[in-house]
Image (tube, protein in one colour):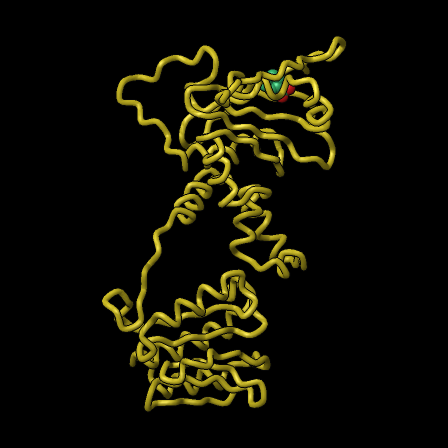
Amino acid sequence: MAELQEVQITEEKPLLPGQTPEAAKTHSVETPYGSVTFTVYGTPKPKRPAILTYHDVGLNYKSCFQPLFQFGDMQEIIQNFVRVHVDAPGMEEGAPVFPLGYQYPSLDQLADMIPCVLQYLNFSTIIGVGVGAGAYILSRYALTGLTSSIPEMILGHLFSQEELSGNSELIQKYRNIITHAPNLDNIELYWNSYNNRRDLNFERGGDITLKCPVMLVVGDQAPHEDAVVECNSKLDPTQTSFLKMADSGGQPQLTQPGKLTEAFKYFLQGMGYMASSCMTRLSRSRTASLTSAASIDGNRSRSRTLSQSSESGTLSSGPPGHTMEVSC
Ligand code: BEZ
């Protein structure tokens, strides 16, 4: 019986006569992890993402992607897109050998260089094409936000989508602050560290939980509301005051400073740091009304809850065995 044999077939379909490769331009940008070189083919097409490639180990963009991108049938696809071919540091043609002891960027850091490339080119969306290590790098990049610039990603962390699309004066102000920050590169480093954070691994009743009094506050329309609710569920309810602030988004300290001040007073009072006479005076002097309802996590019956009541406009602090209610 004839044995099946593996035969390698290389498709030969080079560019047709008249099909010339588009002119390429090579650029380098400095990033927090060193400089990165990339080559751009074609021109940006309005309302279309760029195709961004990342090659595998042992290759560069040409040895990895030239046969594909110069394949005849590929032309009708790629002519509709500008292409950005990234070379990993030191892999570009003619790259000098790094000095002895040079610390090569980690794959995460290589992924973190991609926003610098996109910012430089002023591109906001890409279709990523990666091979091997390049596929990992692009996946890592996609995990931290594929389609947004760094300021937009940070705004999406700070505020809810509803707040952002409402485009209030506050949103415009903070968008402006972040977009034009002279230290945007430093902000990006902080952002990267945040995205690489370890889990706190809190466990209610376990060894790893906060033993000190905690006041947790989250807007009921905050982008990370679920995470704060989950955090509350892992803290010691006898030590934790949880306030889910009604009609509040991602930054209650900016939008609801009055309510937050009041909650903080009760929290401090719970620790014995505010005389109740002072509390009464402060409450009386408060002019802003707390009219909206706060939602309270149902299974926190033993925890201190700072709650706003919609009917009476009261704010109450309820450590076990000690509930205080002050009319406002
Ligand atoms: C391109 O057209 O995108 C391309 C051309 C040569 C090598 C790699 C890519």
